[in-house]
Amino acid sequence: LPDAARRHAFPRYARVNLLRAAPDAVEAQLRAEGLEVARDGTVGALLVLPHGTDLHAHALVADGRLILQDKSSCFSAQALLGGGSSWLDGGDVIDACAAPGNKTLHAAALLSAAALSGAAAAAAAAASHHVFAFDRDAKRLALLRRRCDGAGGAGRITPCLQDFLAVDVNDARFSRVRGILLDPSCSGSGIVTAPDRWQEEEQGGAGGGDRVDKLAAFQLAALLKALSFPHARRVVYSTCSVHARENEGVVAAALRQQQQQQQRGQGGQGEGEEERCCPGPWRLVKCLPRWHRRGIVPEGSGLTAQQADCMVRAAPADDTNGFFVALFARGPADEGEGK
Ligand code: SAM
Image (cartoon, rainbow, N blue to C red; front, side, top):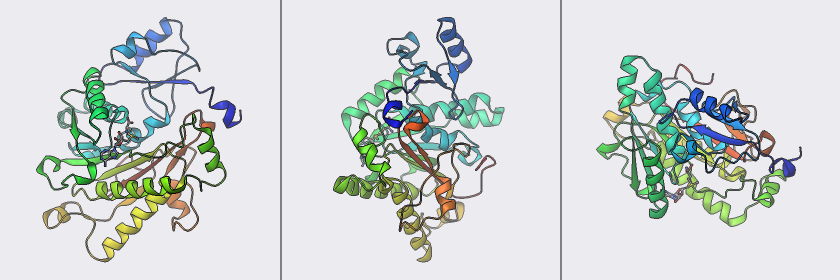
């Protein structure tokens, strides 16, 4: 199907909320009700049902066992926490721009899944994982709080009404933060209900005008902030934009700034003890390595083809909204990295 037709025929995606239910049980229940259900090959616990399946009023959705979430929107938490996670080392996660909380809940669920499936020691560590969910919009954060409480996130997720750019990265509350999920405000040009914007990207991604430049400046500031947390080991950056300026362009600019900091001997992290415990520069890691659609090299970005290959894009041709993900890492490579 051409993109224009395909966007009206996406399957219904529903993520089993591991905080509340096991995928096998939910799948079996839906099948018993006569529904056609398959498992997604990229996102664990994501169920795929035929286009037009209406689950909005379903009891599984009402009680938080199923979360209606588009496939590509699940990529952020999956990229951060779905592979090997020894780098987490019992630590916490920040969702920097979190409301209304789809990715916050997904992250909390993946952390709890690690607790359920891990060995006793890993389980004990994982049980203490915590997600700090920042948003600067009070109404949206209130919605996140309601959704998280209703979906089993209470006690695991702390909503924080705060501008992420103003957070004190050396605050003792964040000393255990090892992972950061950054899904900042973007043009939303990948959401295919905005077909005009989608077409701009098909013509080279140059569209969007000043608004995209302003968004890209904010996105870069937020990404640099995330990379400045002294004990962080992984940072995932995602947007539902198709504009290269908000995606590969932001990643390239952040890498350039990191490199400049390294050259000036600042290391892009804290001082003294922190520098010793978390040495080394940030690098791009190949995220969702089995996903076929990878990042691009925008002209003049300075990115290499290998760096672009680390990143992930999604498009309507993949039966999901346009999306972008990049994963940064520092410290020792994880056992699951790039596999
Ligand atoms: N990750 C969310 C999800 O999957 O449900 C969607 C996040 S939405 C793309 C971006 C969010 O960032 C908005 O809720 C917006 O209020 C918030 N935001 C924008 N600027 C922010 C800032 N400086 N600090 C914290 N939150 C911010």
